[in-house]
Length: 211
Image (cartoon, rainbow, N blue to C red):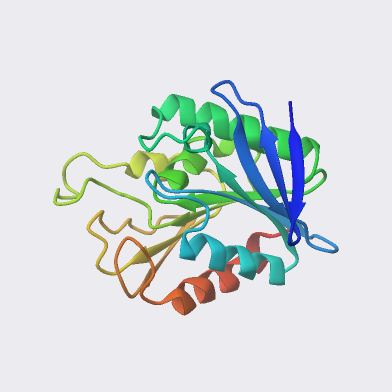
């Protein structure tokens, strides 16, 4: 079941997933060239400053925007669900949006931190045109990138990827790749230090992947 309410230009949709209802906050561009769908971090929400700022950039570029809350957050739980549940819920939300509010639009998917990981792992299943990673957590804080990393999640994406990473991010700095651009901005994992640098990186990249 999907319930919608409209407030200040935002349509809030409750979307059923295999692991409970998720919520998508959708802002439609007047004549959309594409769509940007973003997920939140493990312990944050869709009001994170970088998500909000990047959403505004996408809208100004003519893209409709959806900020997605995972079912565990909608249910009021603070601990993230297992990866397989996050992936299944995210895929269900993107598919539902592509059938409805974002119909006919080629989606750019992404998110911050854990949300970026989900978007990478599911990019092929959601039909993503590109992936935007804000503060991708390459490895656990305090651990060397030479140990266990999440780089395979980035390497598995077959469409263009932009990673915007704080220069002092304790979760590490992902390398560039054949299909992957990494832009370093001042600050740490929160990306709050210089939002102008974050939005500038996204603004420069979007025209190359939006269609």
